[in-house]
Length: 471
Ligand SMILES: Nc1nc2c(ncn2[C@@H]2O[C@H](COP(=O)(O)OP(=O)(O)OP(=O)(O)O)[C@@H](O)[C@H]2O)c(=O)[nH]1
Ligand SMILES: [Mg+2]
Image 1 (cartoon, rainbow, N blue to C red):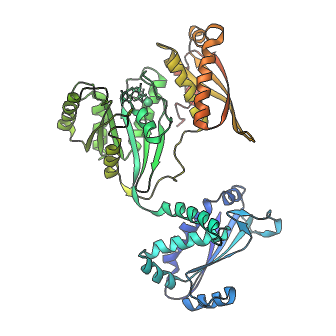
Image 2: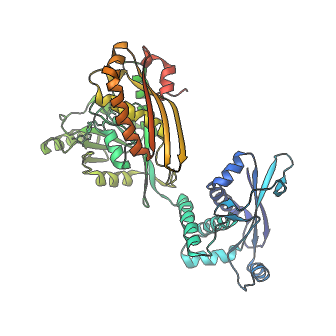
Image 3: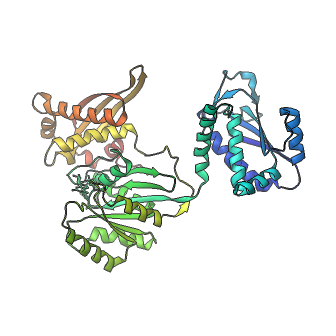
């Protein structure tokens, strides 16, 4: 636990006004440090003192401690030597304050702040007082963690970190956007285009996506968390039901709903589309109709499609795109940003997806099964990763993966194995190549095929494959 101890040595500002700001900024900066997180995870507490003083006291401390005759905004006094977030020497047992009940604690140091100086300075910079306090506490905590601006290089490191920490307080259009629609309309293709990589596998076969996949797009001006969803269809087994549950739950979570249709379709509103649009309208959620595959359909088809939806629902925007070519995507982003609620970012800029490499490895193998086998085989197949171990060596990162392709029937197993094991080998080679590229690591893949009758209806198997969550 992080404990802040305060003292107030001035009369013009109230602790109750400043305390919550200090608390928030100090917590945020401290939790961003891997070293601090490690200590906290080990059950070691963190202590920090902060004191409010008047301008004259500040001048006195500066004169005494730093031999400068100035009223400064904040001073940090680190309790131990650190460099860029790491201790310069191992922590010794005597450094810990033994807490009475709560166990060991590490004292990081003092922050001394002069709120009247800070307020004047905020005015000069055109910031609010709150912003200035958050900024200075962030800056001060970074000093306690061994960041400084003695050299240009040090300053660059400190400024970059400070900037990313401060981004958490800036309000901007941000929220969740669900990509929903029938199978095969191109939802995952759009997600990949927006994320600049293969987060979701795509294929010409319907029902490719089986679980919701998040991809967060963070820029200076907005943050959009896209949720790719399984295509809407009438489920025929427990897997299908779990897929529809994942889609419905993503739609429920969304701030803006994108309904995707195909530009080549005839001009009428389908039942599945109508159902999700009505639901969104009831929840007062903005809805955008995206007409995809505009590259592959005659232009005359698009206007009538827009018209039937506009007549029926008066949606918030209609955007023809080609997810494949990237056409229309800029306009789609503009419309989304216009409709998103404004607030603080929901994700760190580095938090780009909820998909782990382990999940992506399994999906890349399944994609090869989709591509390299015909007919009904892909629908009865799932992939389980049994081992996923990574190692850092002089040759770079290496990943060892053992995976099982599960199928429902013996006959399908034979087809997947192929003559002399040729098929599974070719699936494995292509999947390994895709992983090597996506993970930027040398990948080793052992692939086996196994029969498990009726796995699509067995909840335990669906949990294991990650298609269903235990409630
Ligand atoms: N011509 C053309 N094809 C596209 C476009 N977008 C997607 N496709 C193709 O449409 C097929 C289906 O794309 P996916 O992205 O897998 O579709 P999906 O909506 O995610 O499908 P499910 O996951 O099954 O619900 C693939 O073969 C894509 O290459 C597009 O803008 N133009
Ligand atoms: Mg998909």
